[in-house]
Image 1 (cartoon, rainbow, N blue to C red):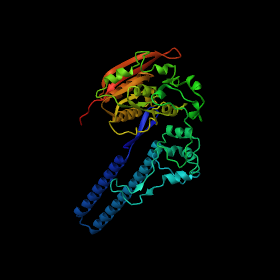
Image 2 (cartoon, rainbow, N blue to C red; image 1 turned 135 degrees about the vertical axis):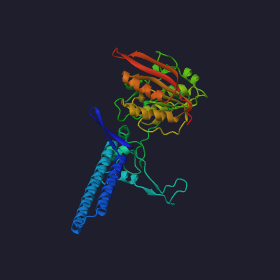
Image 3 (spheres, one colour; image 1 turned 60 degrees about the horizontal axis):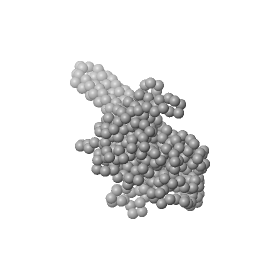
Image 4 (cartoon, rainbow, N blue to C red; image 1 turned 90 degrees about the vertical axis):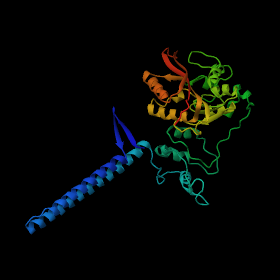
Length: 421
């Protein structure tokens, strides 16, 4: 929080916070003290013979000191005013503004949720806290109207069928969402298969929530390319999903058995970022490796489909800090979900979080990452190299897209080093 960058054209205007203002104040105060002392020294060391001259000189000195003090006070007030404006600009740019509950049309449940609640027995001796504070994403303030709509429901009644509204808030950075005191819509999960048969068996489409989605069945989903990694990815009976990770179609495709053989100390648990319909987790489950798959329901019921296969979905955006402790995963796999809008600083924050949850000696599998241009590939490569990972496998290859154009992809298996502080 040391600075805020504001892009203006090709340049960058950078505002320094308290360090700049405090330095300016110190310099002004020092100059004021020095000037005052010099006037006083001059007044009391000079010895004019005429008493009237002495009186006039003292009066003149006092007048100058008074003027200097007024000027210093004026400058200090201007600095204080500028600091307040700077703080307000920073809040507006970053969204670190508390939600104003006095606004009109704010849902009462939002007010209740965000209230601080004192602990009934006073201060907790272990944590030192005295009250419970609600957790809500700071960017929710930018979408307070949508947030209020999300929190507008009947207490102890059924929740509105508004999961898409919640996802919209998450994609706007309003994460975590506030809790609600209503009952989520219940969909009977009939026909679920026992594990491991569930990994490759379709179930009734009625167990999924199709509200807010353009497609209303699996056939529609399989006829579309939902994203770069999901074309027909809901066909787990006879589509390409049945061959993923066990058969290669190009040099950028790695086999799960080959990657597992690279792991030192064994691969037991892993984290899949942007894992589509859960096929990677399914292949790893066949090899007794537990995978948590992070995905949103963008254009399809990904989370429910993954759960129906007996796997672990995590409804999470890439802007959220991963809710895991440090150094817990043996493997982290990322696909094109790693793309965060082409912003190198956001990618760097994401990479540091991946590094945080991956244990020393663990594997980072970058699977068919699309390099839209040389700058993007260079930026990713530079970020990876600064972590000091060992390159166990590194392949840059080309694929022909549906338009007949060549695209560059990067696949790599990297091993996290042991760092000695």
